[in-house]
Image 1 (cartoon, rainbow, N blue to C red):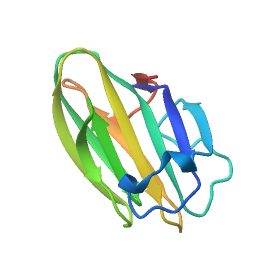
Image 2: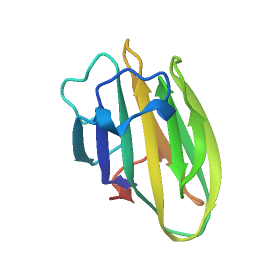
Image 3: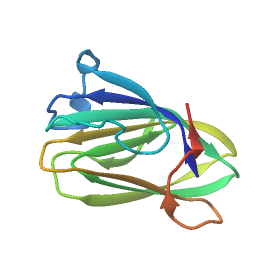
Image 4: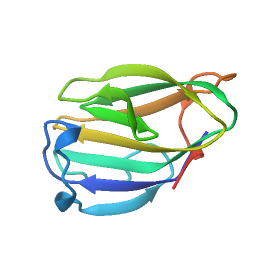
Length: 139
C-alpha cells in the first residue's frame, strides 16, 4: 500500500482534532507515508493528512488507527474512526465497504505533549492488515 498526500502542520496545543484552526497552519508538505515529516516538532502540535485512498477492488476494507494523543480518520467525508482526545496510545478500528477506485480521505491528529504515536493500518478484502503506505493514498 502506498501514500502520497498533502500534509499540514499546526504547532499549537489543541485538546482535540475539532479545535484545529487553519489560521495556525505553519507548514504544508507532501508526505509519502502516514508520518510527521517535520524534523523538529513543537512540544504540542496538530497535523492533517489529506488525499485519496485507492481501493484496488470492490469489497470491505478494515482500518486500524493507533494514536497518542487524538486522531480521527474520515473517508468519503464521513468519520470512519474517532480516536480523539488526550490519551495514551490507543487503537481503534472500523470497516467500510468501498467500490473500486479513489476515495477522499482526511486524517487528523493532535499531540498534547510527552511523545506521540500515529499509525494507520489497512486490510484489503483479500489481504492482511499492514501499514498504509504510498501504494494506496494519493494527493
